[in-house]
Image 1 (cartoon, rainbow, N blue to C red):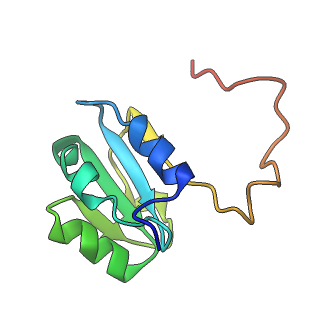
Image 2 (cartoon, rainbow, N blue to C red):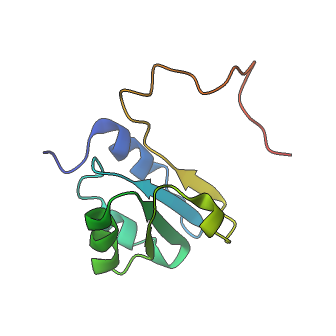
Length: 103
């Protein structure tokens, strides 16, 4: 398996220094940990895989093992990073006339 796939590589380029961020990590995360570790003071990882959460913790990145239970997350984030699984990407989650703009 390559270190990262094209989607993950793109997400890594979008990381903003100093932004309070949440990174969703799954079995396709590859070796993102050295890059994410540079953002660790402001970045948390949430993973549905125990081994992936442990890999993040090994790199001193705050991580939680959970089946995407966001109710456990009390923090607010400036940015959320989620790689859409290829089997899900062709199915829109909602109909939208344009980009989402937070109020």
